[in-house]
Image (cartoon, rainbow, N blue to C red; front, side, top):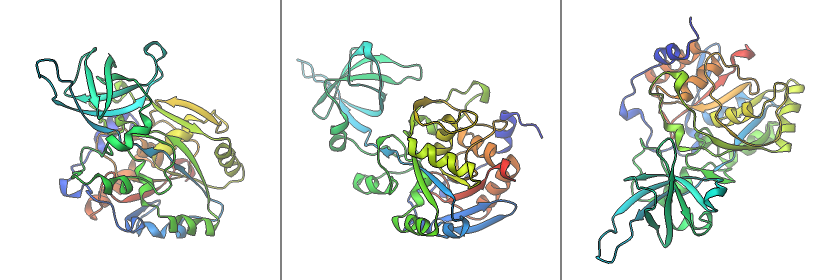
Length: 354
């Protein structure tokens, strides 16, 4: 069967009833379902994970923390009393733009604004100073905004989740229990299934744990609208510490399994792979993993059930093989699994490990 990514994506297409898109996470978190996809499809519960891993396995998490990046801004009022309308702002990330000065963020604005327009985000003034290729605007602030987002922003939930009005609930629930470095505008959702108690059970079993950082961008929800070859991946910043690089390289050298928690962890490890080892350091990645692209570092992948037509669906097909992913998604659709960010999970085996 052809490995052409467009043909693979077409074969992996499926219709998902809206009722199967999870609107709330399982409680407790580790009571979500877990499909184990290997020679056979096995249906388990996420808290069964200690029985599916081995002493010496290395779990690698993405510890990025979601920031309250959705802000309801207002237009300034002129001397005639005109203006004051609302603008929905999704702050994406602070940009390195020396030519524009400090404190410049990329952001999606609804409705869009032109260069020179001003906005007020709470008591913080911003000026539109540029436009990016994808339509995002560059906003220049007069101060470092990171300390102020908790007071003016809301967590940016995916568009398919009906958020409601109580942002306090989501600030805890749409965040992994091990989240650390702020910077994501979407959660690395495979990690939402872990509880502190489950992490401790895994440590007691002898499962080693390490973390990377990849700040997830809004482009993670962007479907592939044309040819796969023409799809432009969004850039995301990542970092791999010396301790994590050493842990991964030692595990590989000793024949122990590396278990990636989430596709963002896979993308980070593969971005840091130099052909022989994972290298410590920081960078920006646009890596696009699709069938025909080998996944070199992780042996197992914990991931959720993804959108049809998405880059994430191609990544898991590259990781586990198209045939197994098709069988797994057929089983998930038939078996009542919950999909997307707050849904159930899968444990996949790398096709190269068979």
